[in-house]
Image (cartoon, rainbow, N blue to C red; front, side, top):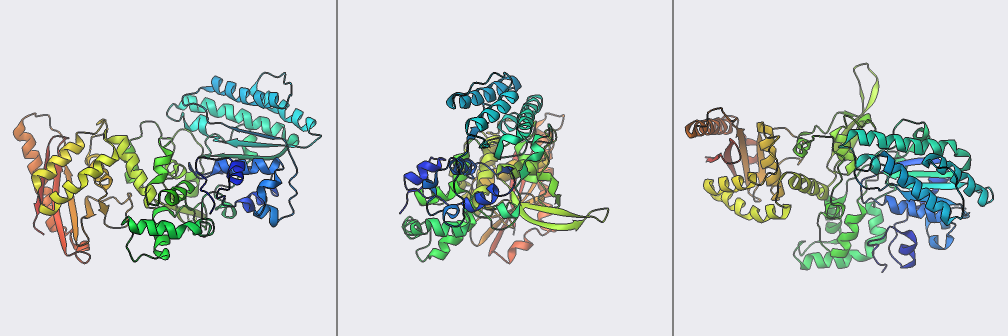
Length: 547
C-alpha cells in the first residue's frame, strides 16, 4: 500500500518515496500539445502547485518519474529537456508596487545566477526578457518554459486597499507584457492562481493566456473524482470503513457503498464547467489518514483568504441570491465592485450548480448560472468562517452550548433560551452593522448553525424568509418567528419593554395566522413554535407558542 502524500507539493518526492499520485498527465499532455500559454484558477488546496511541479519535471526531462503514468505509457512524448523558470508570487500582504517589483527582480536574478548568466538590465520586465533570451541561447535554441504559481496574490491579498491592488496589477501587467514581447523564446507558459485578478485585460500580455478554468475538457485537471478515489485509495477503504464503524461514526451494518455515499455527501460536488465533479484533495487525504469525517478543507486553509471587497460584512454573504446570474459574474476582473458570488466561487465556498441557456431582454441566448454550496464540508467551513469573523469565541465553543440549548428548546425553557442568546450576542466583536432585523436574524441563524442545528429545507443560505425551521430530533422540528425592534430615543425601561412586548405579540400572531408549522407537520410528530424578539444584545424576549 502506497503512503499518503502528506505535506508535500513536490512531485519527485511523492514518486521517489512511493506515495500516492493521482495521475493527471492526460490533461497535461493535452495542454503541452495544444496552445502555448494557459491560465487556470482553482480554490486553495486543490493541487495547483503540485500540477505545476509535475509540468516542471516533464520539461526537465525526468522520464524516470513518470513510469506507468498516462503520458509515459499511452503517448509518444519523448521527454525533451527545456530550461524552466518556475516561481511563486506568494509575497507578503500589504506589499506595494515597488517592493513587488524588487521581489520579482530578485527571483529572476537568482535564476540567472543559478544558470551562471549575466544580466545587465535593471527593471524587472527587461530582466525577464533578457533572461529568456539568454537561456534560449545557452541551451542551443531550446525554448523556455515559464510556470507561475499564486499569480493573484499581489492583488488579492491587497484587495482591501484598492490603490495598492491597482498598482500591483499594473506591475503584473508589465510582467505579462514582457512575456508577450519575448514570445519567440517561449515553449510553454502556465499561470495558476485562485482568481484572475492579477491577469486582467491591461498590457496585452494576459490576453494571450488561454483561460481553461471552466473548459469542460479540463474540469478534472485538479481535485479527485470518485472514480479516482476508488482507483488510488480503494485499498484503504475497508480499513477506514472498519475504523469508522468501531468509533461509532458509521452504523454497524454500513457497507462500502454506504461509505462512498458518505464521502460524496461530505466532500463531492465541485463543478468547474461540466462533469466530472471533483473533491478537494486535502479533505480526501485527511479522511483516509485520520479515519473520520471532518471539515479538513477549512482546517488546512486557515486563515481562509477571502478577497473581500472593502467594508463587506461577512453576514451579508448569507443573503446572496444563488441563481439567475450571467456567466460573466465569475469571469470579471474589475478590482472595484467585486461581486460577492465571484468572491465565494473563487474561494471555494460556492460551486456551479447548473448552467442553462436563457433569452435576455433582447432575445439573445446567454448562459444562466446557478450556484450552490458544494458539500457538507464546505457548508460547515463557511459557517465556521462567518462565526470566527463575527464572534469572539471559537466555533468549538458554540458546539459545546448546543446540548444545553437543545434541552431548552425541547423543554420550552424560556429563561435558559434567552440567557443563551444574550450570551451569544455578547460575544459579537463589532456591532457597526447592527441596524436592522436582517442583521440580528443572521447573527442568531449563523450561531444556531454553528451549534450544528440543521435547517429544514434545501439548506441554502440564500432563502430569504422571516422564520427559521430547524431539526431538533428525528421527530421534532422547531419553527422560529423573529422580530427586531429598533432602539427608540427614549431610554426608559418601560418603553423598551413595551417595544419588546409589541414585537412578541406580532411574532406570535404570525406563527398562528400564517401557519408556519404546516409544511413540517407531515415530516415530524411534533412542531414547536417559538417567537423571538431582540431589541439589542441585552434585551431579548422569547415565548413558546402552543403547537
